[in-house]
Amino acid sequence: MPSTLISPSELSYLHTSLSLQPPIRPDSRLPTSFRPLVAETDLLPATNGSARLCFADGSEAVVGVKAEVERTKKSRPLRDDGRVGRGNKEDFAMEEEGETEAHRMREAKGKGQDQWIEVTVDMPGFQRDDDGVVVFLAQMLHEGLVADGALRDRLWISEGWHWRLYVDILLLSPPLSYPLPLLSLATNLALLSTRLPAPISRLDEDPMFNDDWAASLLLYPSPSKSSTGSRPPFTLLVISIGDNIFFDPTREELAVSDAICAVTVGSATSRMSDEDTEKSNLRLLSLRTIDPPARLAGTVSSTGAEEEAGAWKPARGGMKRNTVAQMVKMILEPGGVGEEVMSGLETFSGV
Image 1 (spheres, rainbow, N blue to C red):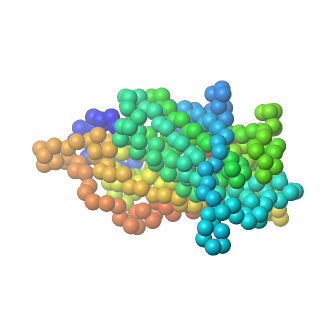
Image 2 (image 1 turned 120 degrees about the horizontal axis):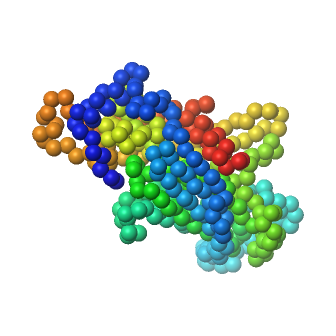
Image 3 (image 1 turned 90 degrees about the vertical axis):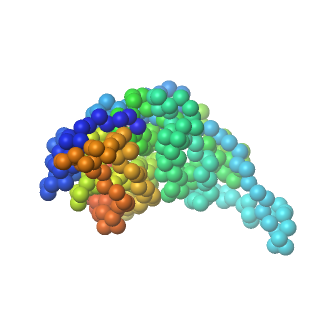
């Protein structure tokens, strides 16, 4: 990450103002407010889905999603005596009628595999694919996508076939701050816009698809009153300074944070036929602390600076349990930050 060239006195002022009740952020935002952003979807040709996201600080990312049909490698079933055999007929039986999309989703539940999703990240200044920062970001994003199991199950076609999803993420601008939220939200928008060809074959046949792209199906269809849908997971960066919690931190706020946490949230949305309102069920998929905060933001304090009067000294140790609990509550509670982010992303995607 780039260095944050802030003097010790400026760090002390930032930390003091952000520790107040109520806190004063450098850009006057509320603790739960996000910076303005610009987004668009379906901008890359020859992809199943794509999105571009740009934050107010100038950081920008483009995500392209490509899907390919691939044969599923599976082990042969065991017979009743424990030996490898072809299995019973009922093991491979498929319903001969009613093979709708809902039926396919029921058949696919629990059959997806993590390796069907491949995530690659490309960042300016990192020429090697095995660089630690690039690998860590790609792993974090992949971990969030497969955590709830919904996406990988959607890639199941039949017992012998599946979709392999390639998610290519390109950070166009130098990483002015920690880029994980930018990459995650851009990936979320790209997946919301991803479409797959509509299947016209039966579940017990080799896959065949409709050539008409207008008949293609969204990877994440919009929930209706008669069906249940879900949305792609996303990761938020949350920091704590004193007793205050801040979302979407800037580079300067990261430099003086006491602790940083990456929270991945998934959503399952359902609508009841006898209700007009939509009920949203947010789930916590993963939570990781990123430390030490001063090193993350590129802030290096010398011994002399620490001893200087009025200089800020980075906090040592981990996060308090009640701080983590408060972060999770603020994201998952009805009408909280998680629902606000989810509705905002759906507005950009046109869902």
